Amino acid sequence: MLDDPPPDKRQRTSSSSIDENSSILRSTIWYDDGSIVLQAECTQFRVHRTLLCQNSTIFTDMFSIPQPSPDETLVEGCALVHLSDSAEEVETILRALYFHTVDDQLPISIVEIYLRLGSKYDIRCSMDKAVHSLTSGCPTSLEERDTISISRKFKAPTPTMIDVLNIAREYSIQTVLPFAYFVCTCYLEDFALGMAREDGSLAELNNDALGICIIGRRRIHEALRLHSFSWLMKDTKISTHCAHEATCSGHKNNVIKRSFRSSTDLVRVALEKWKSSVIHCPLCTPCLMEAKRLHRAGREKMWELLPSFFGLPPWDELKNLK
Image (tube, rainbow, N blue to C red; front, side, top):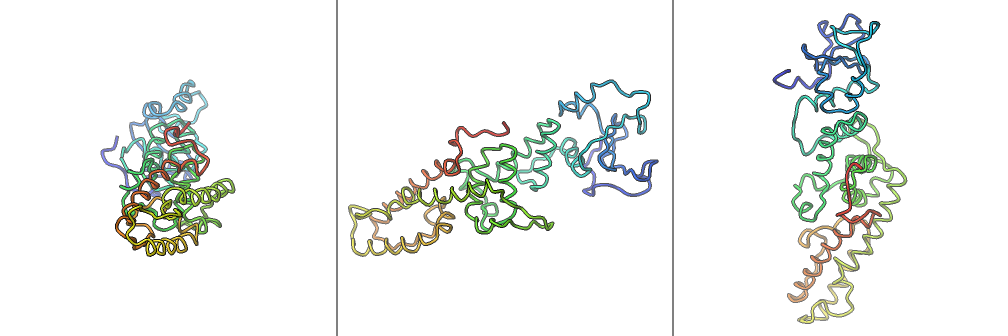
């Protein structure tokens, strides 16, 4: 085995990398002591049968068939196995097996390959890496949500947000869904017609996901009135110890008019702490303290209810990779 990972380029095209058949390319993942050659498209990979079998029940079953047969094609004495996947996908999954790295935030394209080929060949380690990457950016508790670094708090819409939701839906990564739905709901207008990725392709929500986000936004807006912003909806004084009832009432009404004009903007601050929300209400000290207390309790309730806004089971019932 190699001591260090090979360079990032996918395949070498020098004459030494080309098999007797000039159309076949030898991958940089080529071990002289390898016992099996995999071919995807026009690229071959010489790897270790034991490593594949240790990580994949599908490869174990595949290799249990007696081989080589008399008429079987050999490459440098190794049996040749053709795969229907792309060369890029196969190289990506082989790198995951040979070069163990821990990365909380894998590129979404790599996550998708890990899940697609991991599911196809039952490679649990690649699926676990993909799930870890997705879940590290989609918290399952309010405490986790508050500790996510600023760069990962989704301050602006990106196509990755759409991809995360689509992948979580496709592969039943349920613990990712509540927060992924919530983020897409916050930017529903931006995502309604899709968003271009860097390669020019379009990330889109399908009709089912779009419908769930629309319903979820309405539910969040209604729940905010009952919980985080319940102090605004009170017909009476916010605090029984209010020092300036008329003044506080006027400020409260101004916040209602300003904050509830746009359901989208209000949804974006549904999980924010008081200090980082759109709230600016110069209340008297007793009313301000009571408003903050009600907002804090309401925020915790909003997080508890988050899965239900999107038709999902409670947090403690959500599972991954059924």
